[in-house]
Every structure is written in structure tokens, then in C-alpha cells.
Amino acid sequence: MSATFAPLHVYSHYKTGATLFCMKRFLEWIGLKEKLHEIKYQPPHVSRGDIWWASIGENVGSEINGKSVLFSRPVIILKKLSHGFYFVIPTTTQLREGSWYIPFRQKERSMVACLHQARAIDYRRLSSKLGTLDDEDFDRVKKGFSALYLN
Image (cartoon, rainbow, N blue to C red; front, side, top):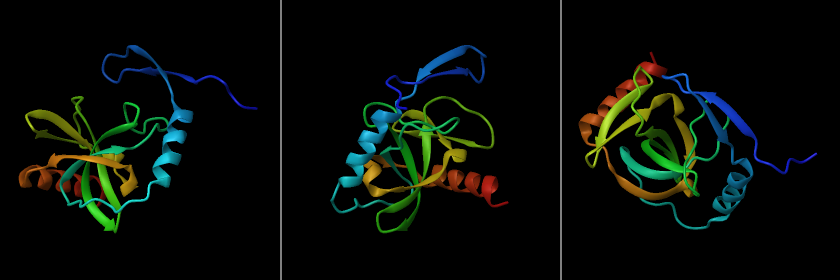
């Protein structure tokens, strides 16, 4: 049995408790994911601390979603795992507090690294480089990640 409609999901805003309605775009994401998979080009030059737009997709439950037609959001390159394969931390411009979040500034814009959403991605998900974290911010992100996952 196949659905011909987009599922409607109901959420409560984490601070206000307001009811939010959201249409999930799983089928649209699957189509883009197939196109990304077929891309054949050399991985871009990526360094630790870089911030890239990445197609992270339409995800499940509390997993962070990408936005726009590319299902993308900025991610911080935490580590290069192998040629064309990276461990990244998605970011948001929404103010968040707690041990899962590390605030930083990028080109005069306040952003937050979402440590609990860290994941490995293939280079084909990367679309364009936004910039690079300064050393102080990158050190805070690394220390926050270590405190959350390794201690």
C-alpha cells in the first residue's frame, strides 16, 4: 500500500509549548538522495573547522532536518575520516542552550553547533563552503564534543 499524501506531523515547540504542524518531505528527499548518489566528481578540498552547506536530508523524529530544495544546512567539518568521507556537526541559527550546543559566530551571524546531531557524511552531500571557524571557536566545539561523548 503506497501513500499518495505527505504525512502531517504534530510537534510542540520546545520552549513555548505551541502546537506546530509540519509536512514531512520523505519522497522528495529520496529523489534528491538518488541524484546525489549518482554524482561523479572529485571530493572538494575540505579541512577541519570548515563550514559547508550539506544536504543532510529529511530525517526522522528529533533528528535535525535540512532546509530548502537541497535539504541542506551548514555543517562543521570535525574530522576527515577518509578520502571524501567526513564527520560533521550540523548547525542552526536558532538559539539553544545546554551541553549539546556550542554557540559561535560566522561572518557576523550567531550560530550554534548541535553536538547531539553529529554524523558521518559522504562528500556528495557537500555543496558549497561558507567559511572556517576561528581557532578559538573550533577548540570550543571540539571540547564540547569530547565532554559530551568521550568523558
